[in-house]
Amino acid sequence: MDNNIWFYTLSTISQTTAAIIGLFAVFVVFKMDKINKSITDLRGPIIHMISNGESMKYLQISNQQVYSEALKFFEKTPSARSAFGWTSDEVGPITINRDNIYIFKDLIEKKENILSKLKWSIFFCTASIILSIYLLTFSTFFIIYNYIILPTLFIVTFFGIIFTVKNIYEISR
Image (tube, rainbow, N blue to C red; front, side, top):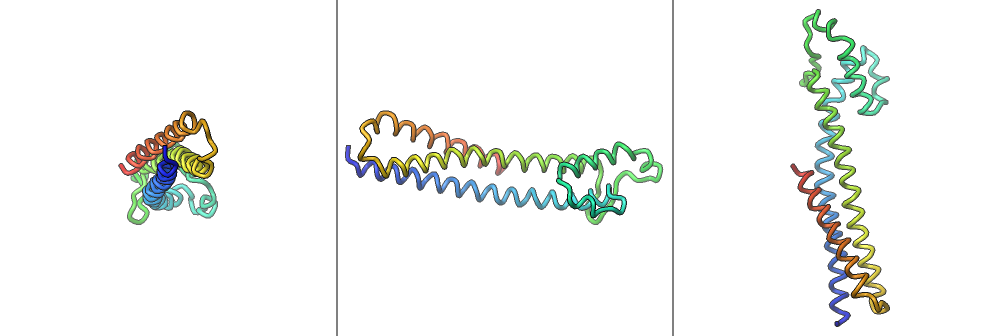
């Protein structure tokens, strides 16, 4: 078989998987920005509610710790709050109640889920790019090229594309 065919095939594989990674990165960046904005919008009022005037202490802790502190706050004070007629704290445009605390937790989990999906897609696509560039460089030296190395490249590329397209679909919903 002509070597030019393999040169074109291998360079196309690396370029295509790089483009897919770029497309996936666009979806991830926009989704993470939207989630971070929602987390920030909820975090401030939640900290204001649980801080009792000591909000500087809560600004340094993670979102997971803010969630835990908010749950503790609702567990400790529901009777005292209802005695005053409060069912929630109204801070600016957001009303904080137990449902908002769970929404905050869901947003934190979505963010972590996206980051874990990013890891496997990038791994397979990067492996595909590296393997295709490696094969492109040394393609004239391999005797077992057609039987072992090319099927491995195609399998890695297939998994990279499948994982990435599946994750793009899941993130965009």
